[in-house]
Image (cartoon, rainbow, N blue to C red; front, side):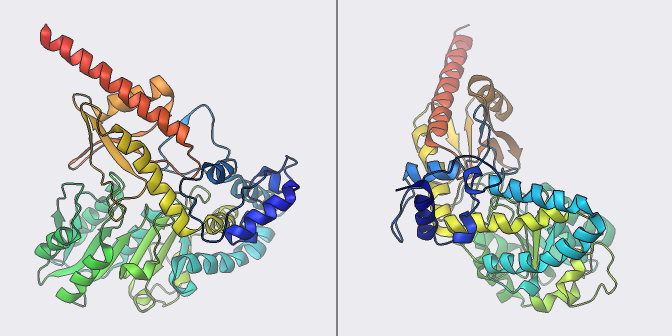
Length: 442
C-alpha cells in the first residue's frame, strides 16, 4: 500500500479531507518532502494511548528536537500547514498590498468567521475576529454600561490583564470589585458556585468567569455559575474568559450560558500568533461600546468590533487552516489525549518526596495544564533546574494562592519527553532532599 493511499485512508478515518490534505510538509507539492504514512484507525476508535497515531500528528509540527517545550499554555506552535498557509498569504499580500489585502483577503474573513462559528457552536453574526483574548475581554469590560456603585464579582485567580482592566474601570468609573479567593484545586463544583453566590448582592451587575484557570488548570463550572447569577438577577451580565478552554475542552460557547466570551486562537487551536476571537450573544451586541471607534458604536452588527484598521490579514486567513487541522483530530479525541498526557506524568510524580500539585487528576476538573512544586525550592529554582538538566522549557508561577511550575504539553508532545520530565523532577527532588539534610546536620 503506497503512502498516498495511506494518507487518504487516514484522512477519511479522521473525518476531514480538507483538514489534512496539507497536514505536514509531505502533504503539499510545494514542500517537496516525502509524504508520511498514516496509521489506520477504525471509526470511533479510541486512540488516546495509541502512540503511532500521535507520532504522526507530532510530525505535522516543526518544534525543536533540542528543547522540550512544555509551556504551550503561553503560546502554542502552529502546525506546518498553518505556517505554510501564513507564508503563502503573506507573499500574496506583498504582490500588491492594498489590492490583495483589502479586496481579496479581507473578503475571506466571512469564511473564517463561519468556520469559527461552526467550531464555537454559535451564529457567525456573534463572532468577531481580533488579536487575542485580552483585546476581546477588554472590549467587553470597557464596553459595558456600568455606573458608579455597580458591583462586579470576579476571582483573584483571574488573568492579570483582565483584573487590571476591571481595576481601571473601578478607578475611572467608581464601580465596585468583589473578589473571591479560591484555594485550588477544588473538586466540588457546588462549593465554587456557592462562593460566587455569597458574593452576589442587589448591586451585582456583572460576573467574570475564567473557564479554565491558566495558573493551575482548574476547570470552573461556568454554566452553573452563570445560571446562579441569572437566577439571582436576570439582568446580571456574564463574561467568560475562554483563553485556555477553547479548542482544549469539548464544548460549545452557548453551553457556558454566558453573554460574552473571549479567547486567544494562538493557544490550543494553534492558529498564527496574534489571533483571537470575541463572542457576544446577539441581543447584547448593540449595548456594548466599541474599544476602537466605529461609525456606529451602538450598531447591532458584530463587525463594529473589527474596525482595527490595517492589521495582519494573512494571520486571519490562516486561522481556517488551523481549524481544519483541529477538526481532523476532533474535539473529543484531542481533549482525551491532552488529559491523558497530564495524568501520565503527574501520576508518576505523586510519590516523589516533597512533590505537591495544585491540579486535580479528575477529567471534570482539569485538562492538560498542571502545576507542581517541590518543597524547599521556589518555582523559579525548579524551572531553572529543569532547563539546565534536561532543556525542558516551563513556566514558573506565583500568583494568589498558587505557587509552582506550570507544565503544559500539547498534542505533539511524545511520551518520551514526559518520561524525561519525570526523571528530571526525581533528580531535582533528590538533590534538594540531600542538600536539605546536609544543611540540617550542620
